[in-house]
Length: 59
Image 1 (cartoon, rainbow, N blue to C red):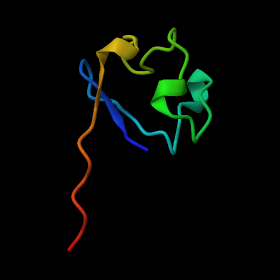
Image 2 (image 1 turned 90 degrees about the horizontal axis):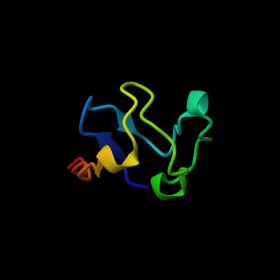
Image 3 (image 1 turned 45 degrees about the vertical axis):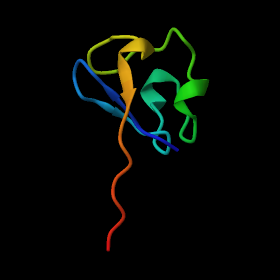
Image 4 (image 1 turned 90 degrees about the vertical axis):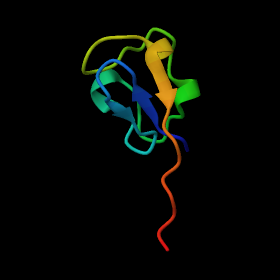
């Protein structure tokens, strides 16, 4: 699953980890997070997150 970065504070939403303190269970895709969820660091909404580029594979 893709990771998403907050454009305001650079916090990364990793679906494998979720946001347990924010009520988002590990394994929850970003698209499945409720629209009223906010960044746990700076408080902005989902609209301020962008997809993180895939990390290059190790050679």
